[in-house]
Length: 629
Image: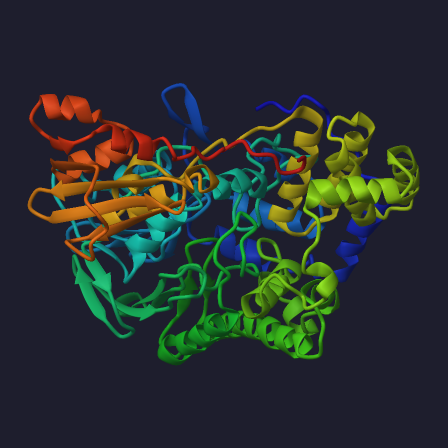
């Protein structure tokens, strides 16, 4: 989408705050820039990666980052974006190569005896294929002899069909539980996550000094074809060793860290340690702003300690699925130790303060990391932030309720907004006072109070304009990439309307990877509960070669029982078919009547019962409002 309403310039208070950042940190330290360019072999010759007429990735989109930092960007975020925008093929060490800057993540290629092992093949098949082509341009036509997923997020498996050979099967390695978490995250709450991800990565923002400059972890995610191939080899324990194409790997399982299924890898022949996404050049998310389960910083820090213990005396370098490597045994241990201390400090200090009675927002305002950690660039909150990570830790232990009974039964946003505006003397009075706060540079307060006016009357153009202006200034001052994108996306949608969800990770491959249980569960979360309170509908599916599955809609709940199970009354209809056809029927890609006519399905009873049941399912809305009611 083209941004029609031009963004406003940075206000003097934001300009002053951004310039103060230059004096606060060691911008003269160029070690990261040296490391990010080390081993560079070449870049893509073509500026665009395309699928037909559609652009999947634009290598030139961030060319503006070569200039001086403008007033509308936090200099620390500008520095990080310059580093992450660099793209090309890089030699980590002889035999290990990385394709960086082709997507949200890195793709790593390890050379074996006959071909190559590909680690984390990006988000999209198109970007992964382009990255592999660049590798082959410089290193020769080596076949892919194995694939490894370090963890269950889409930017680490989505491009797999862009690298897998079509003419033969190769081993696909992943941590135990990978498939379950990979598909459930992208389906169960996938619509809401994808909509919020559009804010997190600034999908509809113009790229430039007053728009999207990156996400801290990388620039953004590609918009190509998300694919998935199920693992053939599970890594189930720390210390497990596997050899693929002569490449020996020693694994460390790290479940519950950056992903619920994740692992680190040590390559003894190269003295190289792959830290997946457990140690990158930023403070990571404990609760990503797109939504997810809260991650465990205590476990995270302990696994980093274990990595140091297991591999610190052997690793001459460490690389990850994002950013650039760290070389030198002493530097690797220092890097991992500071990352460990960062997560441990946030965890322990949040618990200390919550046990003193502070709430999540109060802890977030008070939390400061130790100066020695803050001086390290890789601890900065470019992707996760001290503020929202602290609140996530509070949520993990204490939940949404802060203990104050006044917050136990509050009005929802629209109802509360009308009352606030009325108490404050009406919309005109609120906006008059808010403009004074805007002039004083108190954009946080403007965003809070004007939000009430927008939710009380979303058609109030002056309120929308002032709210957009306040969010814009908050974005200009943010060091955190997703915060900047959220603020600027909010401003864009207040001015120009909803942009919807540009991309979805619930691709055909991901849907196909759902187990039958997960498929039934994905239907259950779509049931219109109140609309089906009085229904009692039972359908039995007889799967050839497997057995019966009985689904029942009762009390507004869709349950399913595999096998004979306890009696639930006679089904209204019994349908016998293959599992493949069951999946197609439930996903709406096949007509049961046509299957019966082709003798692929046998129906006994009243088929209308299934139609009634399916009629109580709702469709998720990928365009739901965020900054308006």
